[in-house]
Length: 210
Image (cartoon, rainbow, N blue to C red; front, top):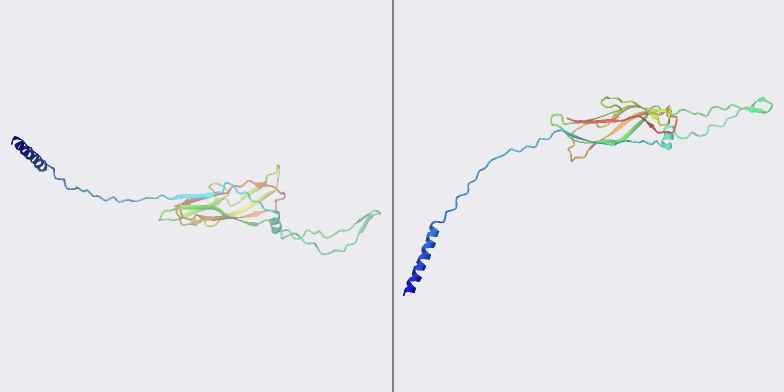
């Protein structure tokens, strides 16, 4: 009998404890949300990427020079001349000098393709990139002189009318196909009397995006 009462008391205490626990379990709070909006902008400044060669060594082979000269001269027509005796052992006869027509090498046009390339980002108001070339830094100088490298050489090549194609163009973007440009100039080879390396000119390239 005592055991039964004890069991009932224990069961009642356990039921009471569970009931009290359920009574004091906190109720979960409702979620609290805060929102906001942020305007996001990306501001790009003009930028210019110029690709160029540190040096260009132009070789003009003999075949190209012969073409400029109009090709190899052919034999002149046969000539009949009379010999004259200046003394008892000497004869001489004068032929027409077979010099032909001098080639026009004082104003040879030269084009160097793909001399530079540019990628650029420009401003909406202007939207252009400008490329200039010159034989002097910071100054528009379209002429220069190359001198034979041999010590004491007086042989020269004159350069004039330096210019570039595609001098002004719209921005390409950094990932776009670059804009390329050719340069042109005229060469005076009339005083190039030696087979030599002619040097002494620098081509300055300036690319500006606005």
